[in-house]
Each structure stands twice: as structure tokens, then as C-alpha cells.
Image 1: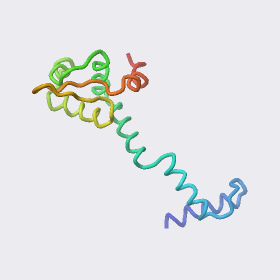
Image 2 (image 1 turned 180 degrees about the vertical axis):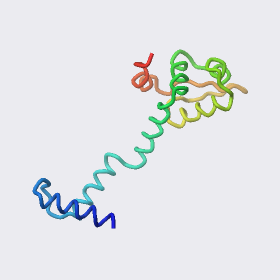
Image 3 (image 1 turned 60 degrees about the vertical axis):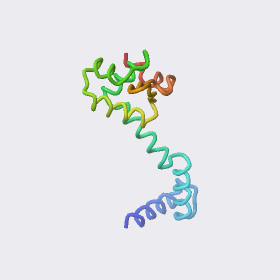
Image 4 (image 1 turned 45 degrees about the horizontal axis):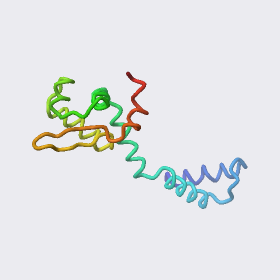
Length: 127
């Protein structure tokens, strides 16, 4: 039913003369191909993870700390008054979004900004 509704809307758009296409089903395929080229599901998911990671005060604070220097989880915990599980949770989200990376040294895990230019572009105005 929804597909028919979309086809009817495209057909009406074409009939109106606003759209220079002749066939609604062909145009529908063109639109789907365009969406896949410029806004594929994988890139949209990656972008969603990135912006969700930036949409939290604690994660922004962690990024600001890591802009200054590399830190281990315990330093971030103390600086922001977080539990270990909360700090690790936020760091995991930041790492999954490609904003931070970790380095192990014995039992310790140190975190740093993965791409400083990218982080500075999005969070430098919030100081």
C-alpha cells in the first residue's frame, strides 16, 4: 500500500510538469540509486554513531580532557567523578565512533584522540 502511494505521488509530481521525468517507476529506481550513492545505510550508521557519541555531556568532557593529553581510565574516572563502568561505557562509545583509540601498557589502558583535527572541528567552540 505504501509503495503504491509513493508511486502515485511521483506520478502526480511528473504530471505536474515540475519533474522532468516521464516514468514514475524509473524515477523511483533513480532516486533509490541516488540515495545509495550519497547516503548509503553503512555511511549513515557510521555518521549516526559519530553524532550520538558527541551528543552527551560526559563524552564531550572526556574528549576535552583527551585533547590535553592521553589518559588512563582511572585518571578520567577521578577527573570526572565517574565509576569505572561508566567511564568505560563512555569510552567504548567514543572508540566505536572512531573518536578515541586505546593503547595497553601492562594492566593499564590509555586513551587518546584518534583524529585531533576532527575532534577540534566539532568541539573546540564549546570551551
